[in-house]
Image 1 (cartoon, rainbow, N blue to C red):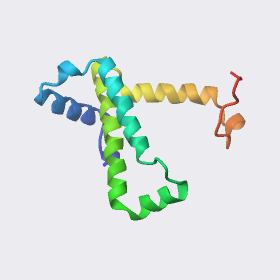
Image 2: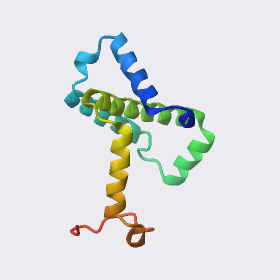
Image 3: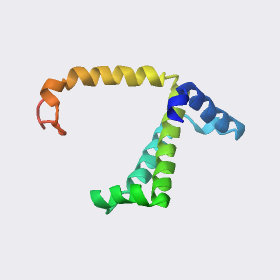
Image 4: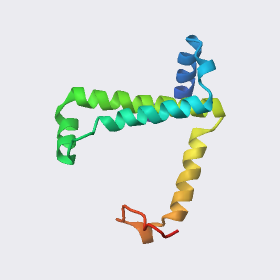
Length: 122
């Protein structure tokens, strides 16, 4: 469960899986970034040609669809973790730092309820 699992436990699990198969030689940052992009595309494919109400209904009532999305999401997360492992990036610190930057860039008072950037503005 998310609430009971530390990020380091997942990083170790991913590393152990990879190392047991002697795949570390294939996990350079460029290759991992490519795989991450491909897996993100496969996640997006789950939603291709579906309308928002249909997606909501399928999450609620279609366990096969929900499982497929969960598997693709897991693949994305696994490759993101591979990237963190290969580069020595502390994922928790990176997320905290990025959220802090986003909070400064998109203050609540100016951005609450606004889902898109103003094109051409900084």
